[in-house]
Amino acid sequence: MYEDKTLVCKDCGNEFIFSAGEQEFFAEKGFQNEPLRCKSCRTARKNSGRGERVFYTSVCAACGKEAKVPFEPKEDRPVYCSECYAKLNEE
Image (cartoon, rainbow, N blue to C red; front, top):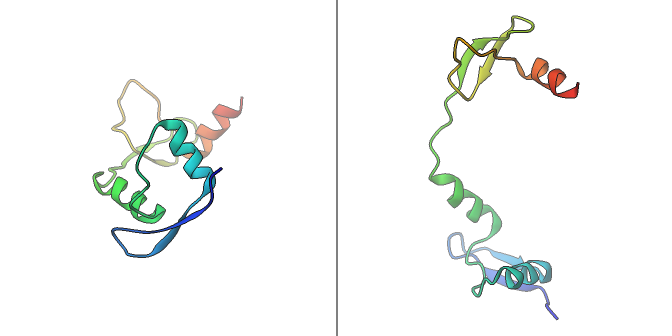
């Protein structure tokens, strides 16, 4: 029913494929317009509204190493480095 289409990105001007699978997905979701931007331009546009992520430095409650986390640590809650956090989630 659907066939791959070649479209031109409105931002960068490069051609991109609007695959049959993507067309079917768009139809299932009720989208009536074809995409105007290629995948990389859509991703760049989506991420442009986000500010830089702020990381905070803390000490890992398990091993004592420095841990950088994307939230402000609180005194009443332990903070773990990525290695110790992964070990805790394995159990």
